[in-house]
Length: 313
Image (cartoon, rainbow, N blue to C red; front, side):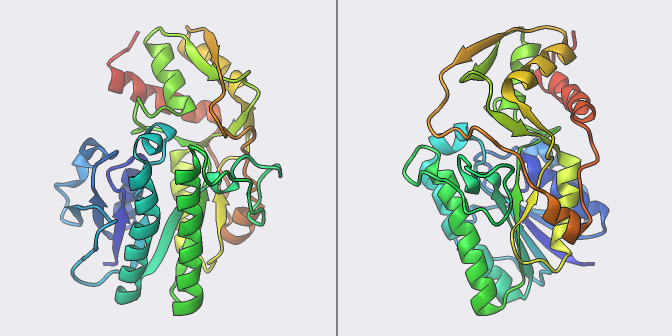
């Protein structure tokens, strides 16, 4: 049985990755310091012999006894609400945490996949965004702590690949949604779902013309799994290229839930105006593309939000 370490295991994406690797027959070691993770996301895994959990901050030295075949580094605050509140921890997990895990991968002769983000493209001047684009990022702006942590993470990962010949993979994740998102996450989908279900107005920042592309979590996890097992050591975009304006998306949520209205507030500083992945590389290298439509994924996600908020009307 192959062993995989997944950091950020109690988070939204990390917990779904734990499920996938358990399903694929791996022994899974989950690690999380729980500053944004939730033990409820992985509670169903604790009775399983093939799952172990370590409560640990990867910014400190990481020790895992025994062999490791793979490491997936998904530990990091990922919502603007979180990384604006915890800027130092965000920078440390992207730098010190990544360094620690690369060192562990080297010691264990394990393949490591690191979770990067579409935020490395910043407020892009190229649309849609492909992996050859270097980005348009404000390193000292409020979002810089997350953007630059991830850009550094990519740089040190490639340095370990080039210098130490370590087997590395880099996934650039675009907007993803699904069950186990935090209802107070602050990003568009959880904010809109929570507001509409509570009967509150949906808050749209700016004039609503900025775009996003939403990928259902099962599709994303499948892309990550394929990337880990591929031979590609360069960054790969994983996301859904079905682009929509935030204003249109708010109207879709209102229609799905059957109530709500929109109010407008000022656009936050450095908020990207466009976000759409170019996934030609993922199609070519991984034979991957998303299969869930936004309408399908939103219905599944709504069921979860109703349960999380205990609102069923």
